[in-house]
Image 1 (tube, rainbow, N blue to C red):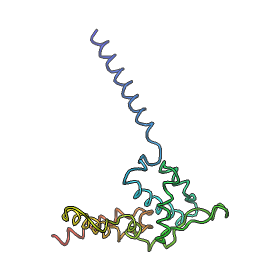
Image 2 (cartoon, rainbow, N blue to C red):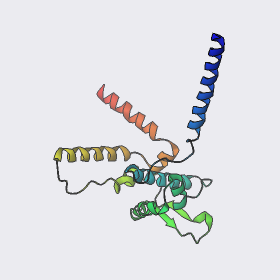
Image 3 (cartoon, rainbow, N blue to C red):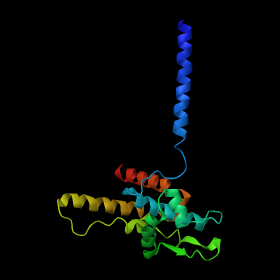
Image 4 (cartoon, rainbow, N blue to C red):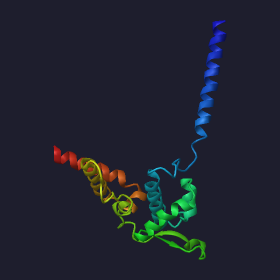
Length: 183
């Protein structure tokens, strides 16, 4: 009898573990599971737009980048992305060619060279703090400091570095330089 119960226990453990694995695997589709109403959505959309347009500029085999492809990847309506893309166009970061032209020439493109475009410039228009802060000035000072630190960190990273995966190498080099100065 104990052998039968042990066998039943092990069999059900295997079955239930397999069911949990199957349930977890269903949620692993490509794309972002980010609600477009969340505050992080704008930054993600901006970064993805710059990433995809840079990828297209660096590789002729990369798929076309359009508002529809970005919306599908972000699982958001295209109308939500339109103001973000308009702001990127007004900042001179991306350009959008008309859909009436040839398929290979339509979509979103970088307006500048990817090796000259820093991520600090990309996010500059999206991380502005309010001009007049009512409340505790210490909180406003901390927010200003965080914005300055972010700008400094992103100023050494270009769009080309992002696509080529060079951002971790630069971060490690800065960490080693800081340790060398401290030591």
